[in-house]
Length: 317
Image (cartoon, rainbow, N blue to C red; front, side, top):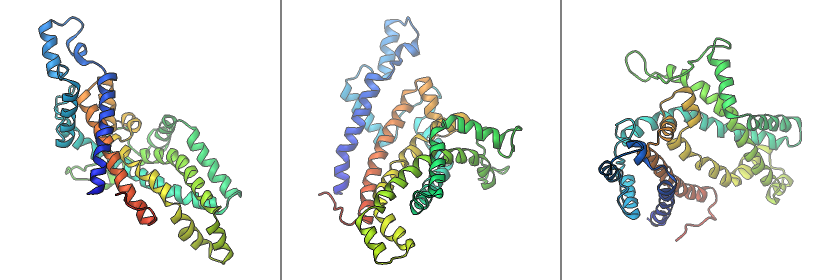
């Protein structure tokens, strides 16, 4: 309960700042919907419909109510409830992004451990060269290259080029079709994320490796395996947990805007991209607000995980 009460002001602050940015820096949709020369009556009616005639705090309270009730009204473009759009698109993004998210962090930690154990040797240099390569190439170029290699007649032509059809002829979920559509986006995500994650985790582990307790463990003759996983990795879990946990809201809410828009996958990333292009404020308000709330919830869970790996971190009372 204490953590919940501490999170409420943070949620209010984050959503308040996000709402200010949307109100004062977002587009005015009145003339976009009515045209350049609307009548005064039409102008007044549209402002009332959009809520522009209300005070700032009334609009903010309405926004909080929408977040609490998960009722964001209708999309201005698709004429469909925003909540229904989110409920249909978020599971697609989760199915799309989860394999790359999990593999990206697990493989990065493993590669960072190997690079740390062989620090300065050819294994370390090879892993870091691969990491720099993944970081230096544009994500869009990676996506195009992998699509040509795996999904076109110029390459292997193993996987579908676009779309998202993960059900079989009986309209049941098919793991075979799922792996067909998720493989190329996952490989592209892995290639890029491994670079950033591996360099970060290696830096964390190298810093831990230079601490006195590791040197003491080596002097006492502990095995390299125990030094790595008991003394070094466990003590490095705080920054590792932080990086992993704060990536979750981007997976759950934002999805991968670039991958979904390029491959035509109907996830929350594509929905957000279409809303930005069309100026669909109800969807943008929902995505921004839910992302902010999820970040705060992730912060609460992260603090609990900190105490699991480091009991010295006490609960804030």
